[in-house]
Image (cartoon, rainbow, N blue to C red):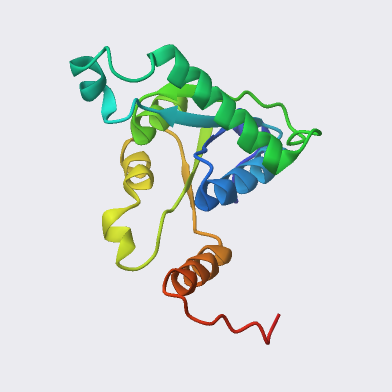
Length: 176
């Protein structure tokens, strides 16, 4: 993010889901926060299974909202521990769990003009038509700059291995 002064950015807000794309975005956000001297705000957005409408229509079924909130906090802590280890990200960090759809939750959290919002850019090719709603929502509605981080090159390799495994095809390991 050339052109940004360290004093101009106070928070780097990043969406975290635990996916490879969000982990790539989290690493990029941590590096950006270190470089700018900003706080890192990893955000995990959650909704009850089936969405809020389904949860309101059948309040007796499933877990209560407090339990889903606790599980979301646990998942975010687990992802942060797995990525940064016990030492942390090396910058001041405030992990945030928000109830709601990811796009609106991230835009609501990164609500200052001096924030930077970092999101995974989703998938490539035909899959992009069906995915990437979060990054598109953030780009369209955020009041702050948005950094869309492309998928890790490992993502396509993992998908290829997964397809081969699912179809029981031989994996060429000669180059490993």
